Each structure stands twice: as C-alpha cells, then as structure tokens.
Image (cartoon, rainbow, N blue to C red):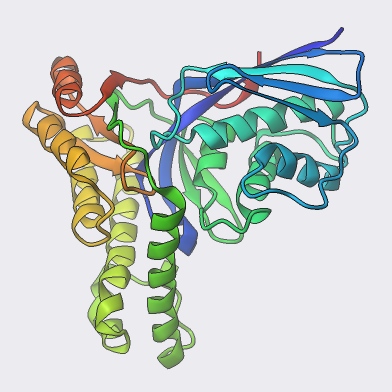
Amino acid sequence: MRKINIVSPGRTCLFGDHQDYLGLPVIACAIDKYIKLNAIENTTALFKIKLPDIGEERDILIDEKFEQIKHRDYFASSLRVLRRYGCIPDRGYDVEIQGDLPINAGVSSSSALIVAWIRFLLEAFGANQEVTSILVSRIAYEAEVLEHNEPGGLMDQYSIGLGGVLFIDTSEETSYEIIPHNIPGLIVGESGVKKETIGTLGDRKEKALKAIAYVKLKRPDFNIKSTSFEEYDEYEKYIPSDLKPYFFAALKNHAITLKALQEFRKENPDMKYIGDLMNQHHLILKNILKITVPVIDKMVDSAIEAGAYGVKIVGSGGGGSIVAIAPKDKEQYVVEAIKREGKTAYIVNVDSGARVV
C-alpha cells in the first residue's frame, strides 16, 4: 500500500496586506509551522479523511464530481479544480491531517491545508502537465478563492507553495521574485482573537475598488500599479470623501512595499530600516484601514517597547496575529512582551515551502 507524506508551512506577510486583491505586490514568507498530511492507500473507493486537531472526520467518494459545492468546502473545490488539470483519482486513501500551525490566527492554516491536500492528490494521481510548485500554488488559489468567489488574493497559496521569502506581483500575469535572504529575528505573535477574514476583506476591497473606479471614470487610462504615492493629490479630487482613505492607503502601502523590495535586493539589507517600513505599514493598516483590535494594538506597542525593529498586524485583520523583526539580543524580550499582552509568541524561521517528505 503506497504511503504519501506532505508538509505544508504557514505564511506570514511582511508587506502588502490588503494589496493583493488590488493586483498590487506583496512580500511574504513561508514559516516553519506546519500542516502535515499522511496518506496510506486503502482498498476502498473512498478518501477517508481524519482531522484530529479539530475532531472531525469525512469520507469522500473518489469519483465524486462535486457539481454543487458547499460554501468553503475546500476539499471538494480542490478535487473539482484538479479534474480540469487531468488529476483523476482512481483509488482510495486513508488521510490524516494535523499539525502545529495555529488555526484562525492569521498564518494561513486554511491555505496550508488546501496546498497539502492538492500536493498529495497530484503526487498520488498526477496531472496532464508537469507538477511544479507554481502549478500547486495556482491550483490552490483557484480552489480556495476563485471557486468560492471569495475576496482574497493569491499571496497565501503562492507563499506556501513556493516557500522562501517572495516578492509576488499579484496582477493577472502573476510573477514572483525570490528574495535570497533569510530573515533573522522573525517572531510571530498570536492574539487569541479569531480573525474576521471574509467580512473585513470584502469591505475594504469593495471600498478600494470603488475609489479606483471613480478615478477611472475621469481618467480611463488610470493604472494603480504604475501610480506613485506622490500623485495622490492629482487623483483624490475625483473620489468621494468617504472613499479617499482607502485610495490613500492603497497608494501608500504600495510605496512602502516597493521601498522594502529595494532594500531586500541589497547584499546586506538593513533590518532596522525594514523594521521601520513595517511600522509605517502597520500604521496605515491600523489608523486608515482600521483592521486592528485593542489586543493587537497592545501586542504591537509592547513589542516595540521591548526592542523590536518593526511590528505589524498580519492579514485580513479583526484579530489574528502580528509579525515582528527583532535584533538577536532582543528576540526573547520581544517574545515575552508579546506573550504578556496576547495568547502566545514564538521565533520562526523561513521555510522552503510545501513538499513531499
């Protein structure tokens, strides 16, 4: 009986939260907290799935077409998308999925699970093209976001599928640049407050897109990707007052992300400067997009006071996690400071991405 084992890391976002759904770039990295999938071939026509971390089990017929999919049923949407890529299950497996990647903490546990599931299915049954990390990432994005008409971008799936530190151009012609640096002093802090992904993301996305639409009514050739922050005054007159903050945030965060990329491209990036850019990014997310909650604010403030170079909320907001960069001699102080205000915190390392082990 064939055995297949997959590890799929979490991810944290360093720059570009609330940018990828606008087709703007992000800088993110995979982290060494994992969803682990262990599969053993069985003699049935079923995928017998066990999720011990959340106490759930599920059986799926291997020839199920899933013409109708329940909301956020990612096992089903993955199987449906994979059929379009010539991945056709022809035998059953007992599948156990568990890990040390926290759920609903803003480190992409759902995307990590989907990537693990897709990587397993491609390993077991193949496809009509070469199976690569970029293919896995693309299918995961289709299965998680497009099949369910959800508001997210593709940062999570590509960060997890490809691994490392990535600058991801999230416009329609997706491309990415590998940043060939580890990130020392990387710390994740969990708030213990469940993030509110779909509502928060959908609201901010709708408002940003509306603001852009108002500009395009007057300036049909407008392209946010090629617009600098210095041009804000030129365009804001076309936008209703209640939408101006979202346009401002989009331009400002894009400018910050590009500055971070320029620094990361250097042979020896200045982590103190990277941290300062993270702090600027966080202030936009907190004060303009208003995606933080009081416990997150306290965690961020405490981390800065303990000596972190930079700290920011991660992801959609309304709870979840923060990411910090700290100098070597302050790492443990920062971890303890975050723990005092939130649920927990820990040092993480950059991971190489989802893989068969």
